[in-house]
Image 1 (cartoon, rainbow, N blue to C red):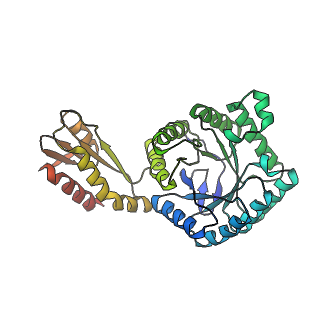
Image 2 (image 1 turned 30 degrees about the horizontal axis):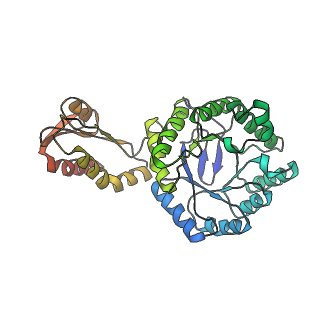
Image 3 (image 1 turned 90 degrees about the vertical axis):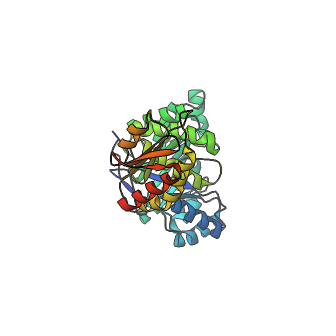
Length: 357
C-alpha cells in the first residue's frame, strides 16, 4: 500500500496525499533559447508529462524562465545550484517549484532568503541530493557514498529548512546504483512525512536506462514509496514519458489508456503477429491519447499467436485475438466475435474498439 505523504501543490498538480503519481521530466535545451525550450516543453506535454524542470545556470536563464513560464501550459520547476540569487530570481519569474541542494547554496542566511521567497510566493521547495554530489564530510564519515549517508544528508537538509518555519517540501534522493537508490528511498520514507520524487539518476541510454529505471522505480512503487517519478534517459527527454507511464501501469498506479498483451511468438505462430500488433498500436495511438486526457478507464488488448495461451488471454482482455494458420479468432468481452483472415484482424479489432468508446 502506498504511503500517504504530506500534500503540496506544484502549479495545478498535487504532489503527495491521495493524488495520483505524477510524471516529470527535464528539458535538455539551453534555457536561454526560449523557443527551443518551449518547443520541448510542448512536446513533453503532448507525450503526457505533467511537470517539467528547467536548469537555471545564470541570470540570463532566469530572465528567459519568465518568458517561458508565461507561455508554457505545464507547471515548471527551476533547477538551481550554487547561487541563491538564481533561486530568488526564478521564484520571482513565476517558478511553480524550485529544486535546490541547500548544501551547495551557501550559508543559512542565503538559504533563508530562498525559503522566504518561496513562502511569499506559496510554492514548494524540492530538496535534492544525488550520490554524485554528496557532501565530503558525510563521505568521510561513512567511508564512501552509502545509502545511510545519502539518507542522513537529505534529512539534515530537511531539518535545516524546517527550522526556518517552512514545510512545503518535496524530497528527492537518488543514486545511479539501483540497489543503493532503493535502500536510500526506503530509509528516507520511514523518516519523513514529505512526498518523495523517485527515479534512478543518470540511468543511461534508452536501452539500459529503461531497464534500470523500470527496476529501480518499479521496486519502490511496489513498496509504496513515491509520489512523482522521472525516468532519466540520455537523449530526447520525450522518450522518458512512455517508459514512465508503463512503469506506473505495470505497478498498478495508472489505469488509463491501452494495455497491450502480446506473445513473443514461437514456431507455432503462423501469422505476422508483430505487424498486426504494431498496426493496432499505430492506429489506436490517437484514441489512447484521448482516453488518457479524459481519464477513461484502461482498455486491455490482447494479440496472441497460437492456441496454447491465445484463447485464455484473449477472453480475459476487453478485446483480443487468438491467431491460427493465417487467420484469427477475435474475442470481445470474453465471447467469440468472429473468425477472420490475417489481413482483416487489425481492421475488425480497431473498428470494435472505436465502437465501444
